[in-house]
Image (cartoon, rainbow, N blue to C red; front, side, top):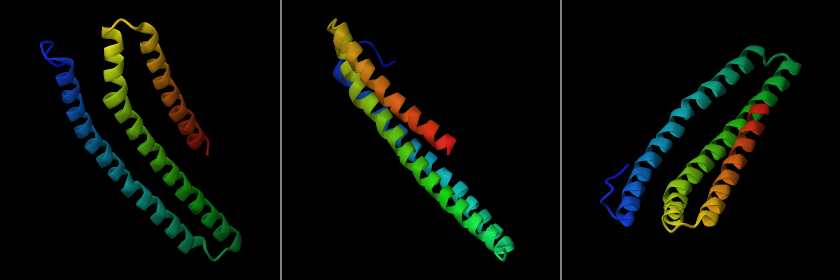
Length: 133
């Protein structure tokens, strides 16, 4: 943790700087997923070229390619939601939570923690839906 002699405003400022660095890392992570999507599209294209002469296989390949594209888009949207949620937790919720604890307001702190729990549960539920697809 940061130096304890710093005021809480300075601690929050330091945390915000860390979040900016992490957002860059997260954006890089998402960019690293693009080659996987491109490789998958290439594999579908090769399968179509090889097996596209068979009408039933052609339709199956097209249907699966469309479903895969939808899954990649859903995954990308979910990753962006994760980035936004984690940024909100660090930049907004944690400083407020810290102040609630420092001012000895456990009910307020608990309500903020429950809000974070709701956000995380929502993301986990969406991940489970994508995994099932």
